[in-house]
Image 1 (cartoon, rainbow, N blue to C red):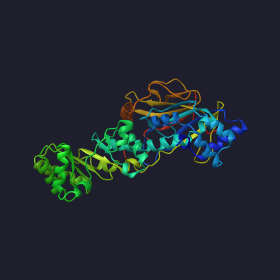
Image 2: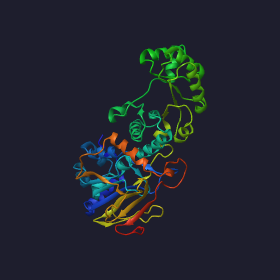
Image 3: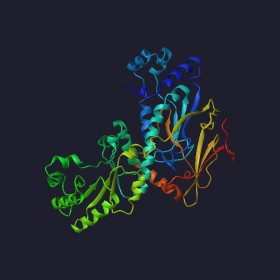
Image 4: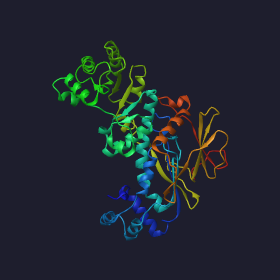
Length: 434
């Protein structure tokens, strides 16, 4: 199926009308930003940028798709002719993937003709809203884990394609691995996984199941010990594997208490080097509550793929400039600031972030401690050289998180970690919607 159908009908009808009245080729600038952070969040993480650029490069309309659109009376002949040759030929700038964002941060700027840029709205938002929501939730879990690894295992809780994107976004945010093999093949995310309760139930005894797994995967494997009774499960695990067992996994119960009892039992049995992995509907709050427990790794699923209660980042895609002239909405609670923006992030001498300065119009040169936030992604429809890899974006997020004020890392509700100030270029007062 043509990638061009990853859009909404009204984008094509707008193009048709613009072609008819001659406005389709007017130079325009669109920006992607969130008016506010999801409830309870103090920062967001940009995820999915590389996927957006890949999809835009392949965004076309083949003959079968055009015939489908004509048959449904979605487009007329003039629009079909335009779409038959469609390739995005404009410029794209934005925040690097793995960068932190705040309210009004223009994380993506799309410049081109009205027709070639407006048609990308749904595609861009569907990727950035999903991946950034997952990355933002996953980053909070990584912070709560305090250096302990987390395995992403949410594939069974979401759409099959969303599962792959979620695994990538979680890895970007610092997760150690995923259970999803498609994410490994597509993006190089490391995988992890051994056996489920079904494997234990298949065998006539728990010990027989453990023996079969160890015979296949070696003593360094992870045995799931909570199918029946956890204490007996640990006994069987060590009896079969010996004291060199790699890890046990506990997927149910009061995890903090159970992990402490499990650690004591493993140590008594001489398996002092056996790790404890816990899983079962973990989110950042549950992980934080286990900070003092003898847990070595976590498995998180549902909360990751659903963005830990925030299934969308709340991004919008808004027209801010036409023919070099600022334009902006005045709708109540949906106001926007006109004109193309550039952004500086101010930092203390120590490196701690102070504020997000969104400049509408001509941007001043960065001052001491100020860092430009956007970078070029596409020029003339062609990706620029040197775009970051997933591994580099992952490292970028680690470095960016260190710049947050301490309050910004709290899981409790509160104001954004740093304030956003919108100013006109060369001015110091707040900008107003025009």
